[in-house]
Length: 121
Image (tube, rainbow, N blue to C red; front, side):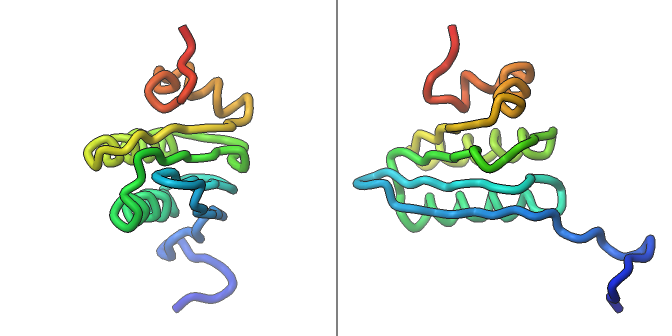
């Protein structure tokens, strides 16, 4: 039974994550991500993108990270997985508007060029 406190056997509460999906014109969809991506909620982002790919079949899917102040290994893994799923579906997934910290993490981990619409040389 769950109460207002968590015992060691309770699952941790889900971290705050907001997802806003919008149509950006023919063949273009944007998913705005806010809050944080961690193990408690990464499935929500994956499922949302899988749903967009299935329902809309966009040529381009923008994942707007302006509302994401931090990213760790779970978030990076989730973005790579969704990028692969989009590629398999014939869609170009691009990450846009990361804050400086998130962009630096994506650069340092070597995934920025894959996920970005404007790769650095």
